[in-house]
Amino acid sequence: MPMADVFSPSKRSEVMRQVRSKDTTPEIVVRSFAHRLGYRFRLHRTDLPGSPDLVFPRLKRVVFVNGCFWHGHNCARGARIPKTNRDYWVTKIRRNCERDKASYRKLRKAGWKVLVIWECTVTKGDSWQRRLAQFLGP
Ligand SMILES: [Zn+2]
Image (cartoon, rainbow, N blue to C red; front, top):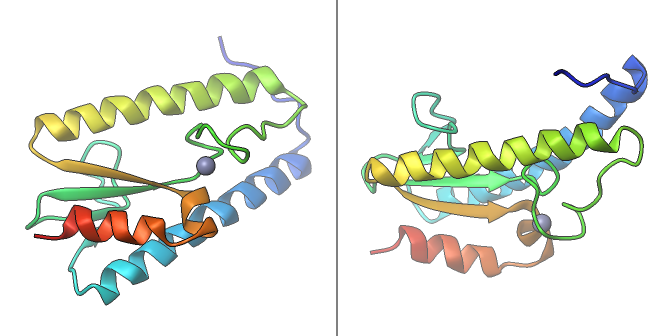
């Protein structure tokens, strides 16, 4: 059963805009780092499960840069669910998580290695850079 949307259209787009802008910046940071490491990759390959954000075809590796809110990260930002219409968001985000897990499973079954980089780790420090370098490295 579809849930009613209690946000007014303007409030809704405000929420979406905030979430989306926070969501895309870490991805660009990760992309430019991967570039600097000298790797070639494709973006958002929709023919792969979950359309991974970065795809390294020769290495058979994919990277997801996940927004903590949308993908339900267990962190402060991930827990920041709007108080209005809470059930709607909780259900939506739970579905996103289930879809994510299914995508990762399908990718691994098809021989891809999967790395998830959380938005909050990109904005907080550079430990994600070592993880990414190790993930892609020889
Ligand atoms: Zn997080």
